[in-house]
Amino acid sequence: MSAISSMTATSSASSSSSTSSGISANYEMFLSLLTTQLKNQSPLDPMDAQTFTSQLVQYAGVEQQIQVNDKLETVISKLDSFSFSSGVGYLGHAVEASGDTLGVDSSGSVGGAWKYSLPSEASSVTLSIANSDGTVVWSGSGETASGSHTFSWDGKDANGYAVAAGDYTLTVAAKNSSGSTLSASTSITGTVTGVDSSGGSTVFEIGATEVSMSDVTRLVA
Image (tube, rainbow, N blue to C red; front, side):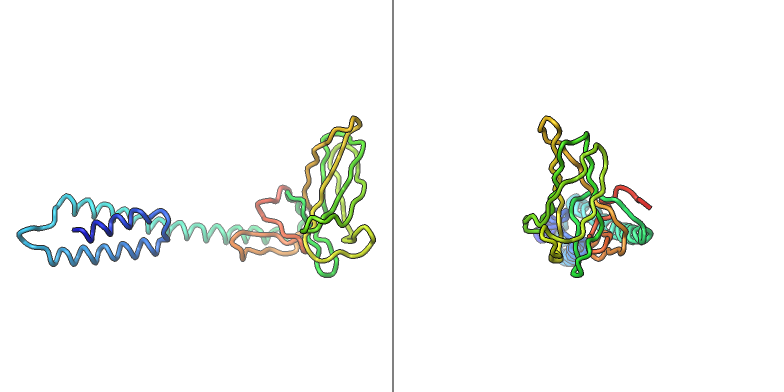
């Protein structure tokens, strides 16, 4: 009985973290041990019926878990396929998504544009663009009116030179007439040029900019 009891404990401890294949392997091993023990048990000291029944009930539950895991994998696979198919429908359409980072490709083309929104009128707005290292490559004044504004960047630094390919982040620093800081929200917008689901989730490509489908907030056109 000790071998089967040990096998039962091992399966119980690992069922929450093991893959279904691991659970299945333990289940098959249990059946093998149980069969061997039944064949070799002494007629004078047979297996306790209550313990035997308890183990069978427990492993019946494990078998059900294996079946549930397999069904969940099938559902997830179908959902991923559906998500990708839905994403393809966005090709050629302009979208708006939450975020503050745009990509620049090797030709200097910027993938999309930024949008920022002010809760009230500002007396001054400074826009700063930094590379992935945090170095500011360009800065300038922005629109001060309350509401939403679109800012398109030409991919050049403060000296007029094309920046290196990579990701660039916009920071909006706004103040009102009393000198208090205004909280500006940012987003990105652009036309979807590609759809990629190789990483397990659907990602839209807006030129060199990558946007998760889950971050899209609006279909513009």
